[in-house]
Image 1: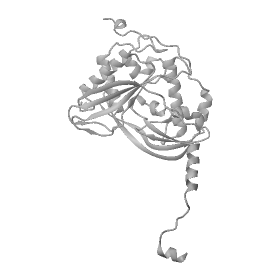
Image 2: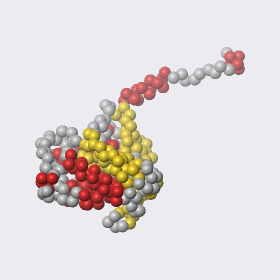
Image 3: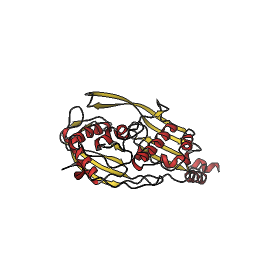
Image 4: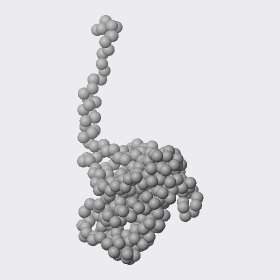
Length: 330
């Protein structure tokens, strides 16, 4: 059967710049067939295994018909070599891997769970091929010792982009997986708020260009300048070394990373809040398809501050103790 007959080309909608980009969350679960030893951060492990598996199970399958793709681009190329697929050094994979299970030993019968977030319109046949690749990758074994797993869940659900609250005064951001932040082509040594905001602005804009065929709404130059005004009022950053197994090099490769938390404030926070709110899905920093930069957020608002002040005023400054000596003194 020909490729065109097996994988029909979907119709791409003519989306306006301010249309919301679709996001599909593929929930997966892998059951260990034997006792397995795996790294604490598994995103790179899973992405690498999926890439090799797609070469076996989906070789030649075309990519979904997104704007600007090179003619003949395959599904595998989109995930493994987006810069080649879109002929742009700025292209980013339309996916993010999520797995926060830090166990390094998985007993036989236990499961690893996570999600593969897919941005843009993904036809059903492409999701099925990804599932076949994920299952093949698991059975061929994960890690240097090739521990076999079995795919026991692969379900799709539309994901809603998170929204920021009205009048935010501060944003507490905590990493769930290590991140790699770049600030003007230099590796960051802490969770730098301007670098976090710029990474989200860049990824959102680039994904819109690749998958929607246009820039998202907004004054991008003004937004980039506003990111420089963000500040860190509280921070607790730990430098981490991310060890990943490279199948191509047949060895472990060390990557620098950051973990911890930061509280982001600044006059420009309300302007950038809608973009920062997307961080739990987009991830921050580099290589989200490797599972890096997964975060959780907690917002503070003007209403929260007012409530805290009212509660503080309502509490008595001191309280007399029911004590015989105190009563005598009165």
